[in-house]
View 1 (tube, rainbow, N blue to C red):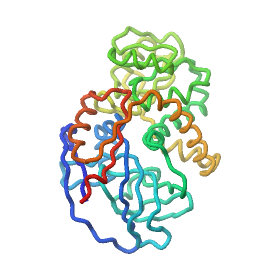
View 2 (cartoon, rainbow, N blue to C red):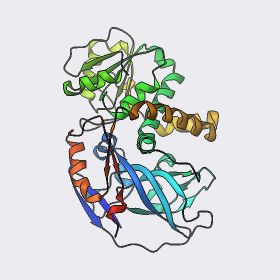
View 3 (spheres, rainbow, N blue to C red):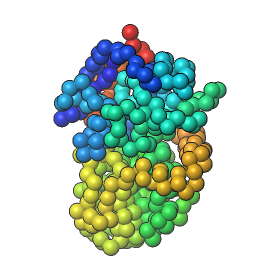
Length: 353
C-alpha cells in the first residue's frame, strides 16, 4: 500500500509512504482506490485537520503527519464479508492512497458504513460508502464534484428551510472555487442576489461563469445596505467581520464552510451568534428524516448532473496517475497556483506495485 501524507504544521510538504499490506480480518473488505478528486476543499480539510478532526479520518504513519481526506471511487478487490462481493464499486471518503481496508456495517442495497474502530468518532456521512449499481457510472466531472456540490446543495437547502433568515443578498467568498460555484448554481432560481467575492486575478473567470449578479474583490469597500447572508468558503473571517461592522444588524447569518485562504475558524467576532460553522451532516440528517434517504439521494444526483453538465465546458481536466506527483500538485493547491478552471483527478493505481 502507498499513501500520500503531509506534514501537519506545513501542509504544502508531502511525501509518499509505503506501508506493508495487512491481511484482512473477518468481515473486512479491501478497496482498491480507482480515482479521487483534488480541490481547494482538500486544502481546507488539512487546515482544519486538528480543529475539525479531519486528521482522525485516516490516522497517519507518525504523529506529525496527516492523511488528507478525499472523495472518490473504489473497487472491492477482496472480501471476507458475505454481503459484499468482489468487483463491487463504491463512492465515498478515502485517504490519498491506492487502497484501504474497511469493515462494512449497516449494509443496504444503496450503501454501507465503515465501522472500523479507528473511524468510530467520524460522523456517519463521512463513513458512508455509496454502492454504485452495475452498469451505472459517474463521469470524471460528476464524481469529482459530487462531494463539494453536496455540501453547497445542503447549505442552500438549510437556508431555504430558514427562509434565508429574511435576507435578499448572499455574499460568497472564494467565489472562483468549485464549492462556491456549486452554491451559486444551486441558488440560481432563488429570490436572492448573489455577490461573488474573489481575488483580483480571478475576477475575469468568476464574471465569465455568469453565476453571480455582481463580482467584487476582498479589497473593495463594501457596506451592508440590505439584509444579507454570507457563505465563507475562504476562511476569511476577518473579511466577514469587516463586512459585518458596516451594519451588524443587516448580517442575518454567516455560514463558515472552508478555508481556501487561511486557517479556518468556527465563529466570528462582530456578531458571533450569527457567524458560525456550517456542519453539513446535520442538514443531511434533517433532510433524510424529512423526505427519506432514497429521495434525498435522487435529489442530490439529479442536481449534481445538472451542475456537472453546466460546469464541464468551463473546466480543464488534468489526470494524475502517480501518487508521487502529489508532492507537486498538492503544494500548488496550497499555494493557490492551480487555476480555478482546472479539475484535478488522481488515479493512484499507477502507484501500486
